[in-house]
Image (cartoon, rainbow, N blue to C red; front, side, top):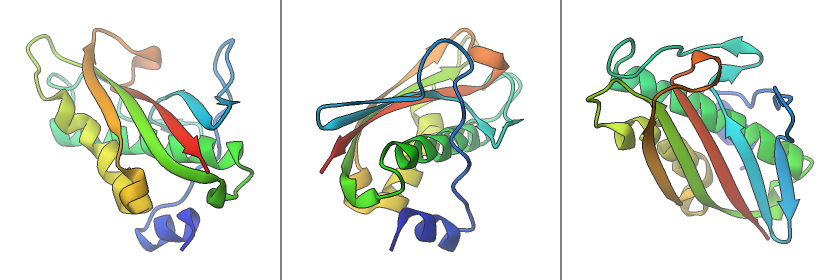
Length: 153
C-alpha cells in the first residue's frame, strides 16, 4: 500500500509540500539521506494550533499539532523522491520542539502525535530516534515544529 493510500485509509490526505518561509530549502538530499527542514502545523497554507502547550493548548491539542507537522514532513519527503516511496528505506530521526508553558514537562507525549503517525503509516520503517524539547517561542506562534531525517534505499 502506498503512503497516500495508507493515509486515505486513515481518513487523512497528503498535503501540498509547503514552500520555505525564509532563506532555506524545504529538504536536502545528501548521500543516502533526506534532511527535512523544520515543519510547522500549517496544512495547505492554513495555520493551526497556535499557542503554548500547557497554557493555551492541551497535551492532546499539542499532539494534533505534531501530527500536522508529520503530515508536512511526509509531503516534503514525497517531493524529495518525486512520489516514489520505494526510494525511502526508513525514517531515521525526528527533532521535536514544543512551545511550552514554563512548568510544562510532557513534551514527549506531544511529539508522540508525530511518532505515532509515522509508525502507523510506515510500519517498522517509521520507527525512529528523536528528541522532544521545550522552546520558549516558535515561528508564527505555532505550538510545535519538527524536522526529520530519512534514509534512502
